[in-house]
Length: 163
Length: 159
Image 1 (cartoon, rainbow over the protein chains, first blue to last red):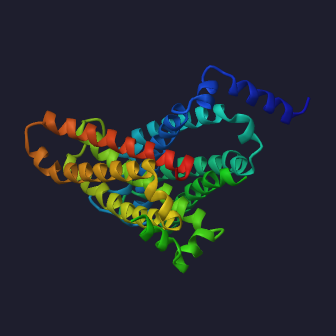
Image 2 (cartoon, each protein chain N blue to C red):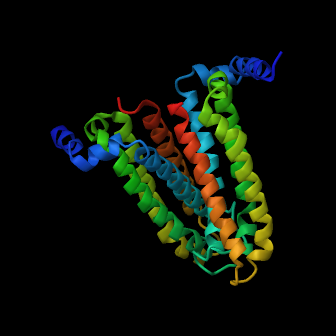
């Protein structure tokens, strides 16, 4: 049995699971789960990009980038958790279709892991990079790259219906 | 009024956008991204009023940092949304779901403005008033409602 078959079997099981089946079949539940996914992403994107932009030297200077990052830390990861939950439920509902969708594959297998790792790096480095207003060029670049990475994740997601 | 929007759809620049392979998805990406930005920053302000976020700063300081992003993102969101709306203007304007989304968004924006404007006053009280928390919670709920309706517009197009 090949990996693809195993994954497909798992996907089929998800679609009939106690959580996947209702998402798949209920007219009102699916958009509600989308709401959870997007709600979590709002917190995630809002908190992540605020720090990125601050590292780029934009935004109010009341606090350093390091301080801002620390203050937003909790809700950043709460947002991620909510987005992950919503995403998993959405996936469970239409797993077999998503599994063979090129845009989804690119999004989940490549873009999200890369963006996530990058985010963690930026978040940790923000403590040192963002301690003063003399933010290193490398830090500015890193912040910009994170913005672009998450934009590319959203791009892949938007293109899912096209594939 | 339908005729006006149908005529609007025929404008050459509108047709260009609607048929463009990369431009239309690009508008979609920016619209989604700025929605997350807008809702995220507004949510953080409301959470501060509710005492659940940013407690090491005053609500005013917290809001002051996030507000520029809220309104910048909202402007981009409005423009990208309008450009997405334009190629299908006639159909969208007849869609109850779309009109509902716009109404909810309008109420949500008004509530957000009210919260932003009152934060300074609320900070001056010994503790943030209960009525403020109710307002902040309502603001959050309406924004979630706006997202829900927006999602349905994306799911069904216009109907």
